[in-house]
Amino acid sequence: MNIRPADFVLEIGSGHNPKARSDVLCDKFIDDDHQRGGGIVADRSMIEADGQHLPFADRSFDYVICSHVLEHVENPKLMISELERVASRGYIEVPSEISERLYGWSYHLWIFNLIDGKLLIQKKVDLNQFGQLFHTLVTQDKNFLHFHKKYHPIFLVHYEWEQKIDCEFRDSNAPALDFNSSEIINRMLMDVQNVPWLEKWQPIIKDLIPRKMVSSLKTMIAKQRRQPSKTLRDIVVCPSCKEEVKWEDKIIYCSHCDTDYPIVGGIPRLILET
View (cartoon, rainbow, N blue to C red):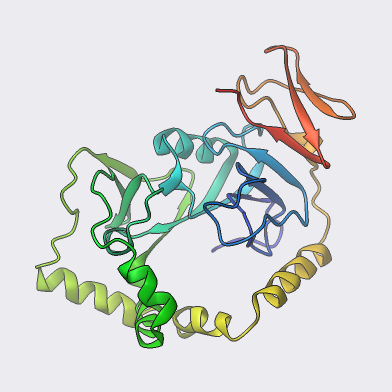
């Protein structure tokens, strides 16, 4: 990620494993761990909000991180427009089509590919083809896990953008890539070989360090960074109308919508009622 030293950074869907470089964390399900690997981490400024209705003023951030979130949302087109609205640059990471068709997470709604610098998005309509087979292999077979980590670049889509997210929504559910094409397969394998050494071995290196230690190190790094020049009070707006709000002790109030948003445990809960 090309994050500059002075950038003010938002992370959406930060969950149990926020990036050390993120200044503000945003998650829709603070009290629900169903779709993540652990309990929520709230070790810096945090807001509960839906990425499709972000409660931040236009261009509040220099950079926004959206890792493993877009595949979950009902309307990724709306969320993409929100990412572009609140930040000028950012990073998106999602499972690739290969990963989705192989592992088939039941709560993922979309399939992604990155072709010629364009993010291709298709509605996921197929049921899980292989059930829990490959999830089980990852957890029980060290050789399969090693294979997955060695070739992890083909299982993920990494996309960094500036000013505009170049994306295309396709109605067809046919694979976007021809996996019978030797040219495409060779290009994918070449991409794996060209991954920088540190990035290639990062998943394996991470496993050598206990998760609690990694989390503690990230928290320490985040706390030691300079204090951002902006606070939540400077940038938070109503998630519905995007108008200014009034902060009180236990609520945030939007006079335009005549709506109260609670502050629970010091965390503003800016989720729209459905």
